[in-house]
Image: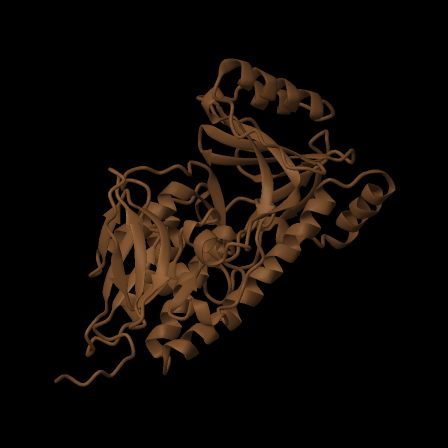
Length: 413
């Protein structure tokens, strides 16, 4: 009988979610695993079909600290491949803040951490996901696409049964020795295993969409991304997705979230567009041009939602770990979700490969991931308050920008 030299050697791991966090974990575990030991069997269960990518917006990856997503990508050996898809190239563009007349209030370009080639970059989220999926598929992991995980049960033998429905709604359940939950902010497994742990409204509602410019995005957005401040409780975020497309999101603080989710009909699109133009009437061109150039199917209205991180000290969660948005969802104002997911995936894999037990590995992961996510949520609250500031407070904050340039953390939004 073979001697087991690692607590997961020859065991089965199920990863629920084939997105950024899940694929990072799979790829990192394979990269860090001792080649002299038998690999665990890994099954990845993803609710979307393989070639379906719903995220066509761009995101910022940080490289200015050890907690940046670019650090995790370098550890995975994927940094150079990722940089090939950078919207702005190695120059990375600059995050800017403008007033309502596009006068620049602040500009940041973070300093790289260590020997990284850049301090930040922007990439279309779907491109990052494709890079990570390709890397994860090089491992021994078996991917099951288009299946829905609806729950999980602890068995008497200590294993976990994951309840799964395929595209035909037939039940195809799986058992495992270790469960990694990475199925996003609307996690079905979190709802089943932690039914009182819900997303919470962060206090702001965004109306936006994607505008297309075949002859180039209007300046000053084409080579940069950032935020317009009005001083009247309204702000607007802009970022290029590629050389022809820009995403915009007009934001306002409201006491309750907006229940509308899209502009699926011409009338609803017209209503959203008119609402955006009315709320943003103080913003100079090219604001109106961008809103008018939005293609209807991309228009959205969304509430900023978040969820505080949690540690895995509940005995009911033994052999189960939540990573990425399934553990700690952050709003768009945090600008940090992908970075947290990348670092979660790497840190969990690293502590598993080098840990003395599963319990110790999970505790070590918690000590890193919990603090990182809690700080991101705290920063998000500060950003929401600042972006929607008004009157005297606005003047004071603008003075702070002019003299101290103290909002470097805005780089990630």
